[in-house]
Length: 635
Image (cartoon, rainbow, N blue to C red; front, top):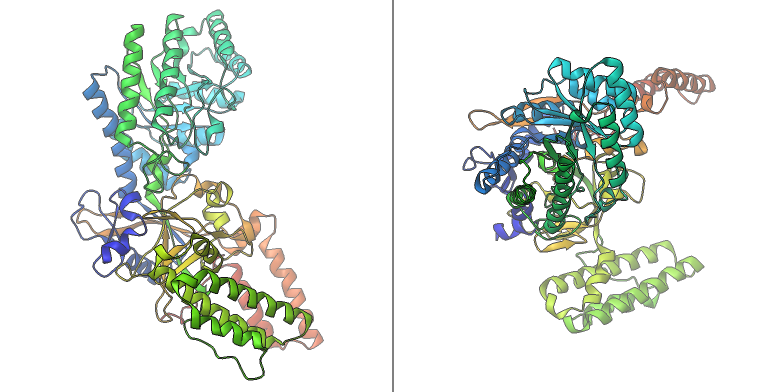
């Protein structure tokens, strides 16, 4: 039974072996280097953080998971190169835009050092960031995006400092600026060209691929660029071809065909005398958010090893057909490296239950429709469940209409709601006990009666893709995984926006519209985890309702296999987010002080109350933007 409970969240499918159910029902982190060790309990981690003053919501980064993913990518390419007899090498780069946080970038540089793993910068600020990191000798620093003259100068001169910086030309106008700056500096840069492939992939980010994509040169513009560089005596600078396959590509056939087309361009450019050395295939490597292993927006129908093998074999075949030396392969895989390493952990603050366990008897002077509704439970059977739900809906709507017209009072309509919730609860029990006997229409209708569990986070700040593009991310309780959950709920955040909810969930048997979840206990904090959020979510969030960045901690397993806190970043305070939106906290404090003093003059506040109000205002201004439990509440 416990294994079945654990599996209904699909953790065994999407967790990639990095999570496990512990004997006490906690969800634990598995040490990739020592998988047979006892997992590290996530609820225990949260209690330890709370004792240190680090409160939920908290974003937890696991260094070991980041290392595992980066090493897995490099090892998979190395294995594919050896098994296929490929004569080139692999040099990956991490796109900074996927997660720009210093702790993440520094660890990628550290863990990637044995593989000469580099970085990709898509803007001048990202280049400045990348230039300050001590990349291993030979690692690539690939510069994409629109570049002004200063950006280009930085890239050209960085090579003089021993940094393997490659400027990828994105447009004909940019080529003119590159040539002008190179001549002015008297230096020859390392250049790349971004080509628009005609092959369009599937998935959520299909628009980033194909010949209608935003960046890159058309076939005609590529030919013109070669002539322009040749005329400027700079054709020997063009050493890299970049072709972006797409993002989170779900279908391996799309990847193979896009690589095939990129190779055709590469071999043709080599035929025209371009001394290309690197074939940069951009992003595209997806991860399986749902564990379904199929071609869909939130899943992929291939493994990491299959992806690497397909890329290497396709390039090898094309190069040998054209009698071209095997290039150094480059990919800009970001999501596959960082997504697993971060998880948002929160607690459930409260729940709204949309059923009732105990029956309620109408009072003698209540309208007869209350008794008619209560009588439904007497003929509720699996065969008549549709009829019973229809009857309950009818009586409920009639009684609500009577309330609006003033026929019945608020006490009667409140009792009617309680009777209705009892009937719904009985129907839910029947559906759970006899799923094959219940019409699908009833199952779908019950989705309107899912519980609402309110979690301490902001969807817009921490999970913008879930709100904006319906990205699915796995969600599961962090405890009681040896106890059958008795509720089905949607998750609501603590913003005041009706869009601040999650109502699609990754489950063990597919995608569902309700999360299996336990009934809350008044003497226990109940935690949930939102997983695989390391890619993009930290950098795309906004300040909806002025909720700022959450607390962030980095944890890792030490040499003894014990999980340790290694780095902590405090979440935004109220005063900090006020400053982000152009309010000066000191001025706000002074303005409020004047308002409060007016209350003292008017006699509505006494001096003691004034002091308490000002202390509370100051404390709140310097506090966390999220719901804060009073210290005495949980001891």
